[in-house]
Amino acid sequence: MMKLNEKKCIILKRKNKCIAVIAILILFLVFENVSVDAISNDIKYRIHKSRFIAEIGDNTARTKDFWLNEITYPEKKIVTASIEIDNIGVTGNLFINENSEYFAWPTSMLKLRLPNHFEQVPITAYRLLRNWELNKKIEQGYNLYIYPYIIPSFETWNYFETIGDTFESEYEDYKNQGHAVNCQFVYTDEQGIVTFEIWCGGVLSGLYSDIFESAYDIPANILFDNLFKIVIEKSSGIITGLGIKGRTEGYLNQTKVKVKYDYYCGIEDYKVQEFTIGPKFYVLPYLIRDLKIILPILSMFMIVCIIVFILRKRLKNKEKVMLVIYNKNHNE
Image (cartoon, rainbow, N blue to C red; front, top):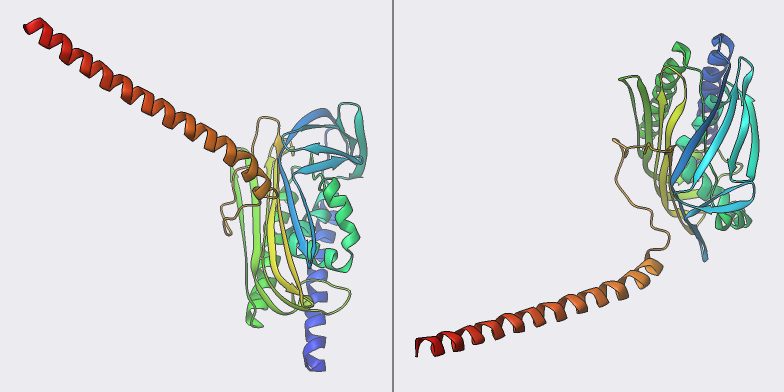
């Protein structure tokens, strides 16, 4: 059993993590006083991937779709973001054909939302364990994440480096507590494009609340990897690409769990490049189903190729025989 002082220390560290992240956000919300030129624009985003697998105990849910305003759409679909930007915030609609969904948030709201994505997949596994009814939404199609704009200012670029340092420092503390975890981030500013990506992952063996916020303590023995990437046009603040990818496998509260997620969206002709940090893995929700479709087709293709090969070989042999007969008759 964990000693009371140790438990208090863990809770304090969790609170310190929240306080550190909130302090950074408040700092930028207070001091980010940037004049924004009014912008009105339509931006087309292609949802390149929206793949999700959840296996919690005997329950399973999977999808290769996303949803907008309660309607399901497949990968590769284009979503148009019609945005209005001013000093107050960003408003507009996300729409596909006649289906649309209104959004509105202050210009700094994105900075409040982003840290939620840095540990999104292990947190999702925990939430599904607590309430499997959430899977009904998953099977309808997973969440649509489109953030069209962020204020292009010094405070914004400094925010990404600061929040990355905060998470790296927190995970270094977790390592010192004996957890085999790590966190890395990369920030680049090249040719007018700002890219930020972060990976948090490793093995958590102890209590779920040793690393993640939770309503109650449960034993955890999980492998997890969570990657996040955002690409921004520096001059305009338009977000040209977004990627979230992760996996969690193991046991939470003695229940076997596996959650995988792979989401990429980008401006219509732009595709977010693969992550440069973290492990490589694939999310294939319907691998067995797809193999059942593909393998018979491949088998038929191979049979046709073999028949064509045999016929061509016979034809060549026949031509050789005819040539020998012709030469023999000609010589006589």
